[in-house]
Length: 212
Image 1: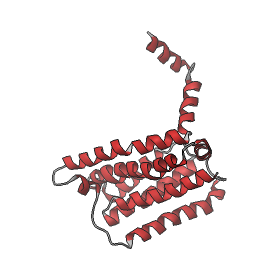
Image 2: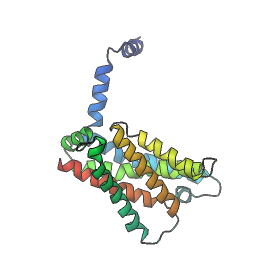
Image 3: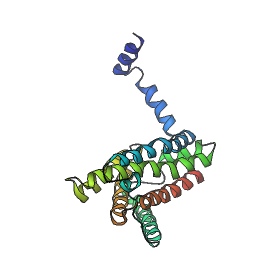
Image 4: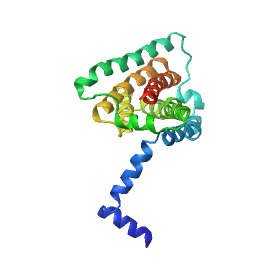
């Protein structure tokens, strides 16, 4: 009976404002975001590895992508990541983006444990998201009828939509960055390259958040 009243109330909009307000408050709390993102490493990443282990002809790591890469790939893709950030930063005023998003400001100002925010956003999110999008999903879709082009677009689109808290322009940038991450995964065959690129991008963004 109680559940039915709550559901009915939500449907009528009686509690919608409070629920949305609470969700937005949690999503903007730097400590909550950092903790959830970091803890997710220990659940999502092992599941991704295990799913790869189940596929015939693969180990967990080979399914995710563990081909050896030469040392110069690391600075090369690192520079590409920073270049994407600089280009967007230069173009953002003409695209209607004036300064950091409010959610980033809120996370930076609300955190009581800056290290936790950095561990979650700078390390946790890159590991979890890359294992899912450029790991498990990439391997399966790349071998399907989608091919390289379809896999690049679909994984980048889904990853971008995951960041619905941001304005459309920033989501568009995330999509473009996803294409770059996917291309790095394709060229190197190594999941750790896009993980490193993602961590570099998020790490710089987190330092910027903490400086606000």
